[in-house]
Length: 351
Image 1 (cartoon, rainbow, N blue to C red):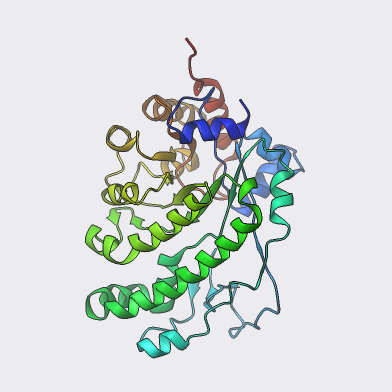
Image 2 (cartoon, one colour):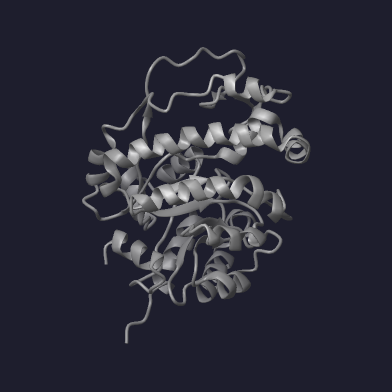
């Protein structure tokens, strides 16, 4: 099978030749891995790690606003400037006390200020050998937190739900239109609409099921329906413990959840596989925190085999780290051991 065939077979909840593999990493780990393995070419490194996926992105065009804060490390499309390690934290929350009219008057980004002309060519350059991920990342949950502040957003759900509704509508309208433009240009060269919202924490969902269904699920459905309208599979990156939310995700037609974290409360792999394994694809599940970062090579191989034994029967599983962003402190040899173990023991028997 080609990597693309392998992935689409798993998405059909059938058994391919072997379990598909997924590699996501921080730029720091990526550079460290290339040095450690004496590989200078990005594509060669993906091949060494048996990665069955490739990603294509749109480009923002037009003049970029000057940063308001001299210490800002990045700026989101919604004008939130951040500082600190990694993605950092917002300097401020501009809609924290905003009225409905002020929310509507906020300078929301223009979804036409993007370039999608290159996407189809870039995707087809892989000769349909790999499963191609595309579409806007669409982290609308996090954008609402940025605009309101986490604590204030929680109060707003109870005290002024119409304000949160208005913010989410504007945010998702932007992502919906960006992805629609991407798919109009290149859907025939893309396989999976990949989006990201971390609804879970170490101890369970960040919002209860009732609040999730009321405020956030309708917008997830909008994006899932958009992907399906273009005959794409839809996969959600969602960190943390979110087992209580999986039934709702399945109800709106979500095809896959990514970076399943077995160390979080409620994320027991055997129960997830038994309860939902025929209705949604699980991607990840090999513990990044306690195994890949801190474990020995023997522990990595043993835990990887244990995860395969639980998750691979019947298809519907993609092997990878339990967090997409493999961090720089992760030993390269442990990541190599994880993928090589999947290559050896993740093969399906043919009768």
